[in-house]
Image 1 (cartoon, helix red, strand yellow):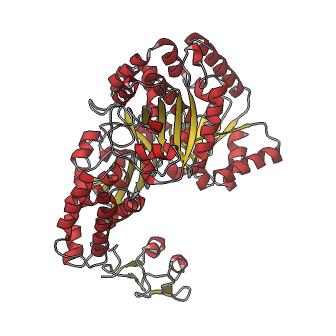
Image 2: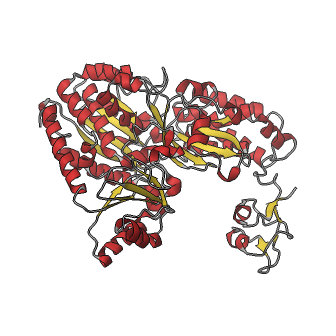
Image 3: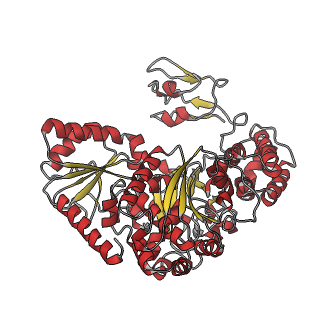
Length: 622
């Protein structure tokens, strides 16, 4: 295969074959087998379907897909009938499978009370995906195939437009033209700082060397973040295609995907995809007769958060301890093994093929003038619709939280949104109409980061939140530079004192002073951004800090030592025992069907009993 026309012929043959297979009269069952689906019981669903097929001697096809983003509905299962109708069932159990098989697969009647969405038009009371609030305002580019195709099938990827941009690039464009297109599109790095991708490629391209490297940073370690994992599990070929285009642009013949070992499913699907790409000629020697050689390796990281920093990541690939080094020289000049190296993250590479396929102007039409395209976010915390979303840059936080996320769970009241991972900032409710773009977030003390978005309600203590994230970054510090190693420890000690009721006058000023110095003098961005959660909460929620110090009171009743233990309203208690079974310290006692009581000395104020109580008879005392 040496031309775009030959590729198009191959694509047509693949598409025709897949269409023929789907028109063979067999129903298809597609099970969501991303990590989130598997954790929710997808393997049990698969076994139940296989059992039905064997026991009833059914003639149907079974396949898998990745995460479509609706994590709150996992496990998910689609039924596609020979006429093309495809229905998604959510929250299914193994006990539901016989009914779905009998009514839908064999008799064509959708089980509406279990169905949550339909591809194409709605069916009966089942809405179409386009009618779901979760998807109405999304614009899926990087996630377009996730949850829709089999991630272990290169044919399904090609049939949906995959590798077309790669062939076009290698057969019809020069490296300089590719770089110009990416620069014109305005693509910025999706891993944190938002550096222009095309400029980064250009700098590496212009550095003379006999050897260059391209690296994909898949070392996703932010608490509550799962964007990279879901993309690698759901559409690995998209990332590989973006890397091939990037390697051609900068002149690299070798690349690495640095992915943490805690992502075994992502690694498995990447390995499968790389094997398939080599078999089809997308990787290897003289690709498409262009004279361009490129191949990829997978490097498993050991889970050190600091290895998300590009110089520490390269040290890890080289077999050294993952520790950052001073810059300059930048990787574009001296990177992996001293050679010019370009590093982008998973989502950045996930955008490249779309730019080359549809053109820079089409890509620029999405987002804002300075923040083009889309951004993927992991919605977690006190929100109704947890999961993965992809939205146009410039959309407001309010739209993401309420229109897509469905608002807060259980009618709770919004307090703040933590965005940008453990190094991000906490944005208060009065800034909810803030547009999501690089500059706007930086102006309010936050950052885009990799895309974690944690929604917090009024029951959240912002001092405790700051302490949680600082503790994470302090634990993950490599210890190489003094500001990060010692400074974050001193900040954490102060926060520990404040949360335990031992805060003193002057602590807040000291925290601010330490935070500024750490941010300005740390060797790498781990230390440079570690104080952000503390500084942002001090700015927007200073009254909570002052209540902890001056009144020895936690307004959210979260911090131990300053919070009242939980109590049971004996008049409302029905003696069901649910609280007894969930209490981690055995602080609750009482006879069945009789009012229970809580030992205040043994209560650790975890709140599990109050959350579990079916009659809401448990609350914190005054």
